Structure formats: C-alpha cells, structure tokens
Figure 1 (cartoon, helix red, strand yellow):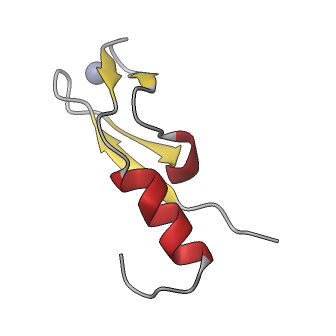
Figure 2: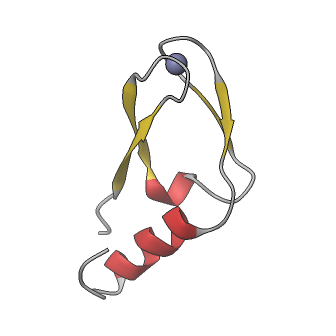
Length: 61
Ligand SMILES: [Zn+2]
C-alpha cells in the first residue's frame, strides 16, 4: 500500500493554502483554488517525481 504524498499549494491570488496529492499533479494538470477559483496549471514533473521518489524510499524530498 502506497501512502499518498500531499503537496501544499498556495494560491498566487488569494494566498489560500490547500492540499493536493503529489501523484495527481502531473505536468499540465489544472487545479482550481477552493478559495477564489483561480486556475493554476502544473508545469513540469517535480511533484510526480517527488511522489515516485518517496514510493521508492529515496529519502528526503
Ligand atoms: Zn485563490
């Protein structure tokens, strides 16, 4: 059983912080701020890489 890695996202508009699963944050994923509805597009694979790294026991992120 793999445990989910949660990433804290800070909205650039309203500064609200919310959690997303790292493995869901693939390159090109659009996330909506639950506070103001601002759309943020994930660029790059740093979050999914982080999730995979932790799955493999690679240590600190
Ligand atoms: Zn917001």
